[in-house]
Length: 139
Image (cartoon, rainbow, N blue to C red; front, side, top):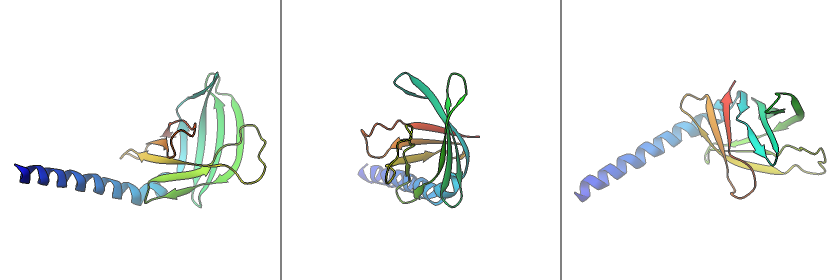
């Protein structure tokens, strides 16, 4: 019985590791493209983002009002980095108040990419940082 449990556990660990390895290899490539976020609520504000992740680790970001679809803000092009080993993306937090001075504040998310590569979910990698979980759908 112990042998069966050990073999079952080993198979499970190998399958999880294999899935992670497949995702690791492809995350930096899979993120390239146009994405729409699900609506995010912050206080009384309800908004969503449209993002273009380009090769060369560049990103364009536009914020929209979730009620009216009106553009709230278009952000300057910024860079991002993907850590394929940890399945994470790091990028500067958007400067909502246009008061940036000095180096941008970086934030990091764990990325779960669905197998169809059309949906990804970002989870705050540092916990408690105030960043929401963001669900993205390929446009």
